[in-house]
Length: 375
Image 1: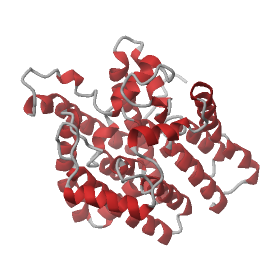
Image 2: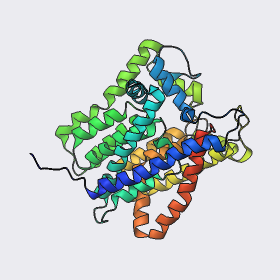
Image 3: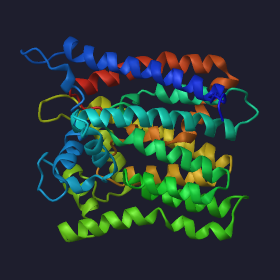
């Protein structure tokens, strides 16, 4: 074995190159935004810029678990345990859970980007060296800051993307294992389980001997529900927590849309009097993008991906109002692959996308790091 050297392929190297450039950009904004847009009188601690919004809740779970009340001011059962417990484990090296979460997202975004590139290349093999372009478009997404912050998106995608690639290749046991891991990270894993089942039933590479593997992803979900039943007395404590803390009680889609349009046009203000109108407008744009994507997937007979996007949209449009759908677009690998297809066939569209997305990504990141609501 002496003398044998591992040579990463071009897709791997180019994707990691774009990952590195995009991570450097976000870290520059994390340091500069609190200084440039400081709303207080004291000199800001730029290293605390990562501790925003849901990161407080993930940190609370990492510090206390689920059975110590609401130390972050919200019911923690709403959040699945995958990310906060990894934050705790990585934080054991002495950097703390928040910095641990940044490390987790840093590594996970690299893994997810590489597998997104490979999935894109698998789906469109006729487009040479096409994969890294899909990863670049994903890294440069307007909401790309959530792939760097201690949020669930990067970690979920690090499991979901290789899982879906395995499913497309007919490697069902491997796919089920990755989807099971994704199901520990966020409730979206339930929709991914559904999509995997649809993909299996409609795939030409279906292998009935592999069917039992498809039940594996339900194990972590049921395990978490059983744990919540033990400490909170309800199998659906996670859903009840969502309703209590984030108004995610079931609402008819047209009523939810009405509430969102009203918030986007008449304005909605937080307790600190900051205007959230722009975010609700972004949610409506994300909904339109999702519906266009769904139509494209149905036209292509991509039934598994269509089930994934449709179930995600359905979950968001049946809450009191639509919010955080902008972040959920990061989970839609067909969106980023589809945009890369357009950019490959019409290069000017790719340049136009970057001309719009990169400034928006900088604004979104600056808003996040200065404590403004960013979905």
